[in-house]
Image (cartoon, helix red, strand yellow):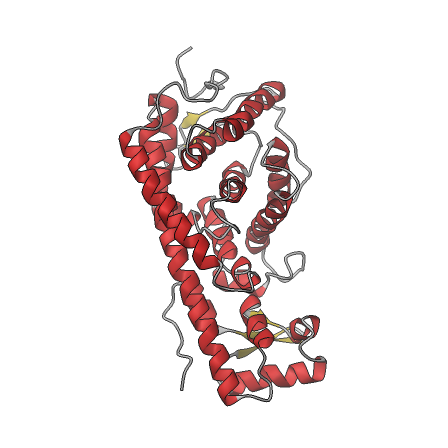
Length: 368
């Protein structure tokens, strides 16, 4: 049957696509995207403590991916509550964005035991939404144009049908080894969004799966590609090109969009990682030179792993006992490297230069 936006698209074609997806333009774009990813992977290896990266760029990805779904918070709030997502102080939007970061982290750890699968998608979506959900079984899901309210797409219905389509999706992403993984990434993302297996959280789940897939296929060591940054800047094209695959089988335009997203965000992420590394080294040199009595590389890394640092963070890292840790943070504040902020009964010590760097604000100066 021809596609109709107001009817469940139960005839969503199985993978692989019914046309050649490795066109000349796609293969050319694929080479550039692969080169950018390779440079990003090398840059990530230049920071020995990977927690510095894992606690920064994935938070930016969590913020942007949530913003695509109109769940809006700020970078500052995410970093402030990064270790307290279950607490009562964070607002609901911040908690939900932090659950995205948790889903990405747990998914990354799960790759050591098993490749991406339908069960991975279910676990990711459960974490993002904070509820014990499953593949949707009830009808009535429809996607609408936000401006007009018109139905633009009704995904397939029936839990067994959805599971069959997900099984096909799973086989394709792992078994179509004659197709470049980056091209499969674009195809798998369209297909997952078209299947739309959950009542909510499909977009964010799909974007987490994108990053996990890059790690799963060895294109990244850790999930530090800020892919949602490109989608935020090109949101209309994202939805238009997804829909065009459904209505016009416009695979080439969609795949080129995703390859451009990978290349541009890989370049941005590489530049940001290098800037973080330089800032960390400058900060370490400043403390070593001016505050030799408290200097340790571990101390410097703690205030980069935790841009909103607590006394307990130093204690947990084994750097100092509580009283000495308080003195260390006060001293760094007096030197202008940190800023002190009262938060309830405790003090937070903020790394303003790092926050400015990851938030695209003008960076603070370190040296004197």
